[in-house]
Length: 538
Image (cartoon, rainbow, N blue to C red; front, side, top):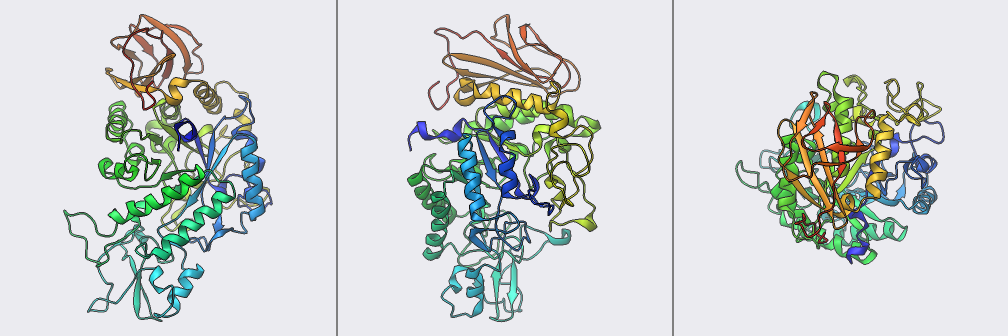
């Protein structure tokens, strides 16, 4: 694929959780028609919208919803809760008409236990699809074949990754819930079937896939136990890379992209899922960045390490919230500082070199909405970060005319209508940052140079041949004087997270920042001077 086609490098992605974005029929659950209705919020071609470039749709496939769509029962059908295939086609057309690309979730590690493939596999040991899943005889004591554990500890306790099937007298493997049996990727027929699933959606116009839990693809064929201090035998095996190379060949034939959920907190292991930069994933989420404490030093070291490990030609990406993690505004809310810190985080996310992924509601500062344990719907308690989008004030938030499937919360002013037109709002900041980024070659594709700064300040330059920007982020709630070497005496302030600070000339010797203020400053372009290099040579 040529570099000109790699639109995802300069794009901003916006994750839509279909359950919670917009309900169109009053049943309290979001749906595809509701998403179509709200596309102008994402990009209507003007600066009254966010101006995002792509959406990532979390699962909408037919499913029993034990894991809210990550237990797929039919890879080629829309679950009736969300609409029909025709609704999906209309949504893709609506997005493309606005210049918004569409990326959808793809779940390769497992299916639902109600998927026709598993029902056939389970029917008898001689089934033609028996080997499409991982079956094994009991251990001599009648227990599971080995000590592998599920990623989902139910009730807070370690849970075996095996469930006994009385009908056939064997156990089946499930890396997650018992209702999510693992596919056997050692079987070429599984690979062929799942690559055909990719083609089905690519033919319907999707532009790429977020690939779920790709590090879990594959297992030790001998089912040997994990040994402390040695590589795990139930994940992160060479087979996963072989499978991803097959996916990549399919995607390249359509000019499509992939971003992988590789939940490995060792950056050197995660980075292997890029392959050589051209043969496995296009992007991989770096979850160690999301898990950093609120510290300029921590985020700088995380970003620098990511940059240093990337294969030649590969591209970084950043996110701070998603459907599996507490929202950043709540995670960093010590002493009530979450909203101010979230403004700094927004600027950081949208100015680092790489592809940003935003989570619905971040643009209005939506916090987690706690759900008492006795009312959890999610089996492992992720409901709080999945609350419905707030479009307007009121108990239903403009999300539905019925009873919302999860509590909406009542944070005053945290809704689109209240913030629309308010220049001091979180929404106004996101719009300004996104549209500034869209017009900036340095932010979309330029190089980066990290700068040494005192106090709790994260500073870096973004550079292209015709543009030079300084980004300075004060992570402290106290004012800071950023003394940065090698800068001209002054620059032009373009964007501040402080809505009361006007654009214009600012001194850079030093640059004074208020507590929890971030600033983008335009610098004179050097003629004949050294420039930070990006993969495009800028």
